[in-house]
Image (cartoon, rainbow, N blue to C red; front, side, top):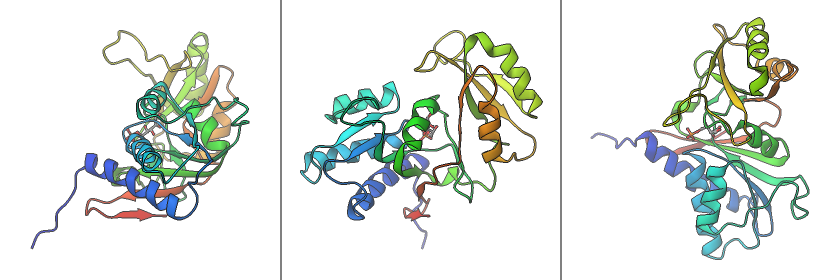
Length: 242
Ligand code: 5RP
């Protein structure tokens, strides 16, 4: 008898739904709350499930902060009210943030920013009381920083000096290029993205702060300070939480 395996796309769809329902059951998602909503193909099904639970009357008076144009457009289409982090209704603090990740190590340190939304994602994640990650099984790895390139958001005018400083930290650097757009990716904040990798796994917590000391770096995609609750969909159709 063969077990039915589900695809990566099915895992992404499943984990968002399961996580939102589980967080409602645990009382971590509740009426009247302030919630940060992430970016990417795994965060989107979670946003859709949140909208369904608003529509079915389970959740009322939800105030969302979106981490990208992608997410704010989705919220607009799904009828989820979106606020700025600075709005008086939000006051710079969130009850919970839910997002995807590119890599997750066993210490729950992350690489994020595959969708170039790391700056707002980190502002949201680091100002949330509870941080939640939803992921498919390909995202859990033994160590981070050598396979999936770490995104670093940089000021265009500082590209050359920032690349030299990143190389001094032992990393190889590539400027992220646009798709269906000539030239580099321009982030939602008008900056460039350097994608960087090491040959041996770096100390992610140390590098997160070292990289941000470079003049011209806006933010980097190591997320090590606010340890998330992680939901990971498995190929066998179950979802594991750790
Ligand atoms: C966007 C992100 C995403 O959460 C991350 O890239 C994962 O994306 P996906 O769920 O599409 O695999 O950090 O900046």
